[in-house]
Image 1 (cartoon, helix red, strand yellow):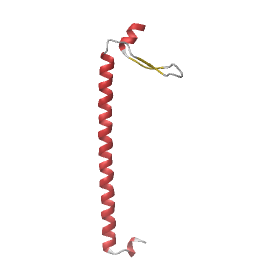
Image 2 (cartoon, rainbow, N blue to C red):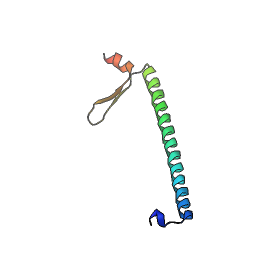
Image 3 (cartoon, rainbow, N blue to C red):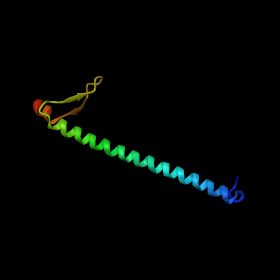
Image 4 (cartoon, one colour):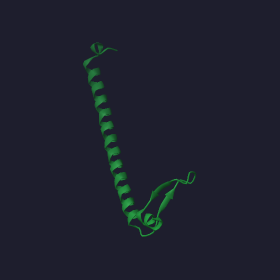
Amino acid sequence: MPDQDKTKEQLIDELREIRQRLSAMEAAEARRESAANELRASQENFEKIVQGASEGILVADPVTTEFKYANSAICSMLG
């Protein structure tokens, strides 16, 4: 139905629905940003722990045997 054929109440109801959807989208975006920040912090902590380890840590793809990650200790060990 075209907007000009709608009653004032119908238009107000539609506006309320749009505002509710917008609020839900904003809340979802805030949760997504929070999760992204938590992931970033977790990755930074992992990096600090692994790089600070005196043991060599090497991660390789089991199929291709390509190195995916190596900490500084393993790099020193292997030259």
